[in-house]
Amino acid sequence: MKNDEIKRANRKALPKFLLFSVACMTVGGVIGYFSGYGAATGGLYSFVGMMKEAGAFFGTHVAPWLLVALAVILPAVCIPICRRAKKLVAAWDGEEESTSDAVDRKLSVAMWIISAVFIISYFLIAASYSGGLAIFDDTERTVVFFVGIVAFLVVLIEAIVLQQKCVDTVKQINPEKKASVYDMRFQKKWMDDCDEAEKMMIGKCAFKAYAVTNKVCAVLSIVLAVCALMCDIGFLPSLTVCLVWIVNTSVYCKQAMRYSKAGNKIS
Image (cartoon, rainbow, N blue to C red):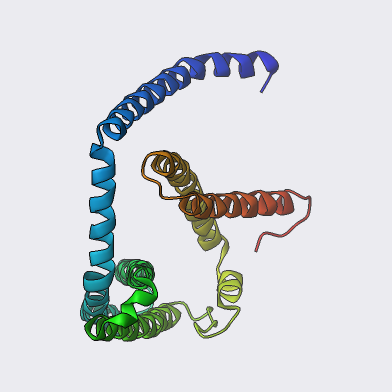
């Protein structure tokens, strides 16, 4: 673009940006005012106390049983999906694209569910740990705690096995893919086996995930900063979010610099 075109584009986009900034500052000011008012009247501290009590109850009495529920629900939901995908593969003539697309959709749904349950299980085990060593002062709480740990391990095993089943099914319709889920370099080998169209799709999905992650991290960092001021949650939550944010951005920038070099093969 020429310099005049660049300036014209900036002038066109600037009003919307300023309007958005003013709206954000207005919302922030309103939230800050009511937060300060709540702190001055003592209502905020009462709310924070209630939240801490609710969190402690959730971590001690609810999270472990939710892990048990996930250990039951995950195979109950994903196994039928995988079986239907395998039936489609068995009936596939090797040419009809609608069948292979249907298999891809089913396996994508299964992988999505597996990944979501996998992440949620990590949150729930962390919630179970939040009771600290005081958990072991009570026999009932100790038993529930270890039930949660066992359920967490079961979920991990189920997730790995189900992912393996999904990948094996994909390899049936894509014989060029050879990587095993249990290979420590699975992702790299899988990427190497993808054709250019698949790599382009992965790139678009990765960029979308990168952009959304940046937005989510920005919002969370603001929310947690306000909570650190008003709710006394400390800086560790903000540090965690910012760590994820900077790693995400740094990896993207590093890879962009790497692939921008002339003659560098994207793989």
